[in-house]
Amino acid sequence: MHPLLCQIGPLKIYSYGVMLAIAVVVCAFLLSREAAAKGIGRDTIFDLVFWTVL
Image 1 (cartoon, rainbow, N blue to C red):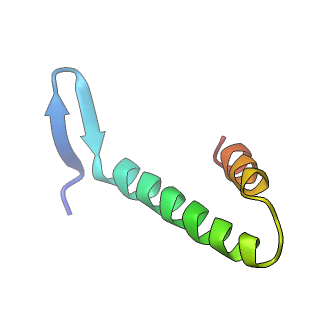
Image 2: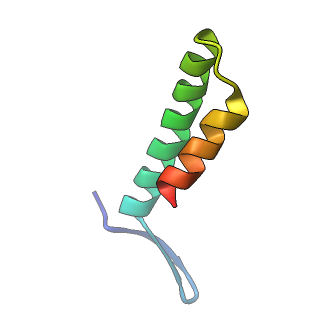
């Protein structure tokens, strides 16, 4: 795996950051589906994911 995916001027995009962002998005989506089945609101889950990432 290449550590540096691409560079646009001074902006460098690293593979670790991309994989981490993809993991957060996928986990948030799966967590919201599971929470909906248990009666927990989507807004609550996305607030939880936001504060956890922050």
